[in-house]
Image (cartoon, rainbow, N blue to C red):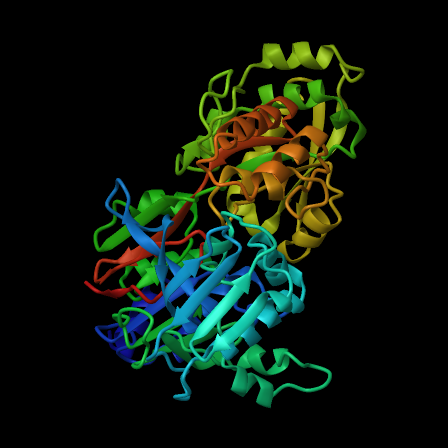
Length: 537
């Protein structure tokens, strides 16, 4: 694609000033056999996943520029698209590993040929320093490490240059897969230490702008708020060589611009497109849309138990029967995803997510509400994040209409995306709100741990049930083939549907549009673009 052709194309579409930075930043012949251009609507605010304040969009840097000890394999889904395989843990920086008989000691042998970008061999001492950093800096990375029962530097040992050992307090089914999440990256400790200070012993200021990894790509340019440029590491030892020597990731806030660029073939990939565009672009020539259900994720309506009417379970159940699920699925999801309503009245399997027993039934809703002190209705704010407005706003409008039919007056409250995490998840003070939590580790009990235990981040509605807490504590580390596992999870699901603090709407899809000249895209639970497997068709 020549620059003059690109300019002519976007001008014809009258895309306006929003594409000017793109036109300046993407050089002639940007998209071709050697270079891919990826556009998305978010912003990368740091190159260090461990740094406080690093946002989700920035996690892609950890994926593409750093290695982990292990990774997940790949599977082919029914529609022919590719996905990571949670059940298949594969080597990455570690060429092999061994678990002790009691499951509490994990020993990893590192690849002999793995080197950092500066040519220094990757050693177990680098792994030790990196893991110490991840459990010490605090915030989300430390919490995610804790999910695998990695909590203290004392657990990590460099036995020799190529042998790394972890000692666990007890065996857990989550420990090995947690090492394949974006968080436990391996950093060049020599480079990091050279830029550490007494005030910043973990070199967060340096690594914020200067990655020091051994991964498949290096970063040759980062213009915050505009673009990031990956350049292939020709000496990468932990996987097959990426298909593109360079990948340009462009931040384009306007979805209409991103859509126009992928439709005209000016870019290679448009990441995380709205459901409406996914449905419409699927029939466009030259564009391939991949829509993958996001594992362990549900878009939900949440009822905060700190709000007095919602302390009565019958009120929550009445709301669950008053929601026009099918209309929401059609108008907010554009029928992209998996319905999460209209299921059996009894739980007969432990698949998760699964349909709740609720459906749109105003008669049941009115009957339940009539049994409470709130039979004449009440007023409540209904909140959603503006960063999720493409689905949350139309869903909230339809919820508002449904609740109005049983006497509950919901007033819509739009909250800026930058404030959402603090208000909804940390302060937990929104009475009624739309939420979209998805668990990285794909087990039902892991979802319930985050979303149904009081005080945990994604329990944004202050739900507190001692039986649920006991079941989660018993089950979280338990092997899935333990005879107690299925009954415990079954009971968790029963409690979740009966207490219904979190009303499931649908399981969403991650939608990605690809130019027909690009292949190799693979869905991952973290929902970020792994550019390593992309290649020319």
